[in-house]
Amino acid sequence: MRFFGSTFRAQFLSRPNRFLVRCRWKGETISVFLPNPGRLQELLLPGRVVYLTEEKSAGERKTRYTAVAVEREGHPVMLHTHRTNGVARHLLENSAIPGLEGAEILKSEVGMGRSRFDFLLRQDTETILLEVKSCTLFGKETAMFPDAVTERGARHLAELAALSRKGMRTAVVFIVHWPFSRIFMPDYHTDLNFSLTLVRTRTRVQVIPVSVGWNQDLTLSQKVRLLHIPWDYIKREARDRGSYILVLKLRNRRNIPVGCLGTLSFPPGFYIYVGSAMANLESRMERHRHLRKRHHWHIDELRAAAEFHSLQAVRSSDRLECEIARALSRIADWEVSAFGASDCSCKTHLFGMAGDPIFRPDFHSLLQHFRMDRFAETPK
Ligand SMILES: [Zn+2]
Image (cartoon, rainbow, N blue to C red; front, top):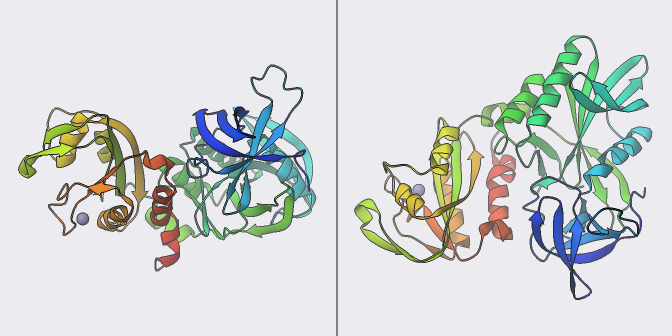
């Protein structure tokens, strides 16, 4: 099935804002519209191949190019979120969504209460209100949604659950644009509220995650797979506890007194610190976002001298911080000895990188390992 006109391949360079990317094509730098508000940090890495279309009549738009997909391991991942409902319609019309076989589309863009839902369906004598979400975040076998906090997503689920209490059948379909995914989980690392809402409403709102694949010519492959949701594992792990990875940026070399370690000289670069809180992880992370007068830990001294860059949660019932520190030591450019590691046998919990870790594939692989792929190795 074809959803796009002819596409051509370019090289991703940067993303100046949410809906604009810059690409290298035929030796020139071009500006390209990106119809996807997601974070996409693990996909849009410098040098990656992106698939573009050209629209001759782009009207008011600043650019006539649109990014429709990005390549990962030789396979295109569809990014054009405006086409998600077209894909869902095609799957519905071909009875390709398990549980919704034979459903007829009565209406799309259905206003209901404060929200608008994607489809109203009829299957036998029942009507079904359906919401569709596009998912492009995945590790080796596991896909997760969302890749950024979505209050709208959580509100949609709560409203579908409320309509279900009034007797309406409701469902949410997650279309995962990666044919190798087998497992689906809400991304409780990034959006705990959405994840808990999905868990809480699942007896009212049917959750149907499916994976699809895109061919090199950006046609949709025929194969659709229903993904497994490990609800018991999610209920155990989706809690406000675990580890976090804090990234700070130091513009110039600084000498910083660090408690018992004395005054250390920090070269400029990015500093990656791993810590944990097996209760109240959210408030611990919040603590690092702001400057504080009183310093309790080594990291508070560096935090006061550096700029806040980013903070990533790795929620887990296991204390993973030392394991994460060991993994970071394998990809870091340098490390700061004995920093933040007085309670464990690690060499350190602070690592340095010359460039931004957000642009490094090995940093994303590390995050995905601990956030998703670890599931496959954990006893259920
Ligand atoms: Zn440790």
